[in-house]
Image (cartoon, rainbow, N blue to C red; front, side, top):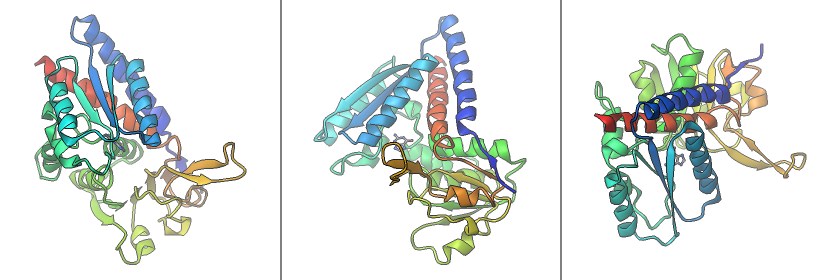
Length: 292
Ligand code: GUN
């Protein structure tokens, strides 16, 4: 049996079309056009690509974007000052500070400075705290974890009681996706670099979310037959037979896993496009909140 391929690009396109339609309706009705501010500090090439993709997606959905590119040596004070200005700017509904920040900057303080109503990344400590508490709803849910959950919901009748294994405990993906799975009544195991007998733990997973950033670490024989595999990894590896001598792979050895899993996200074209789609959705939600 080969797995169903979960087409994140197609799901993301549906979400983006829905957002674009609602944006067009609200502008037609005389309401404000949603706006997203992107803040990029330094010249991390991957971050530059991600921010450009986010701005392009905004334009396609009718969302205005305001790009701020700051030099690598920007001070904590100046970065927080910009965030406060964006908090006060009525054209800006959402503020996205691209991570990682250069090492000399205190990420937690920057994220805490973002207005809760504009926290479209969902990384403000209050939003993350609400996510971690039963019955408390965050205003915004982090984009990649929200995208993983939408793909899971579209490919499983229910998450109730399923064994979910999350590989990785990052603030951006691993921890928030684990919290969302708990909220969905899955039984969740979080694995990390110190986990013992990792392949055996992963073999228990009805749902596997891999977010460790290690190319093809999860082998086919780690996967429970029929499991739903969500591969968040985006790793560039050398491949002399590829066009530029490199290609992208996930955290899961796709060719092996596809023979065992029930459904699996490809890399690229799986989770990646969902992150941007969820960001647009959050930005629209922030604009709707500002109407009230
Ligand atoms: N870096 C990697 N993923 C993300 C994300 O979803 N948001 C931000 N702000 N930075 C990131």
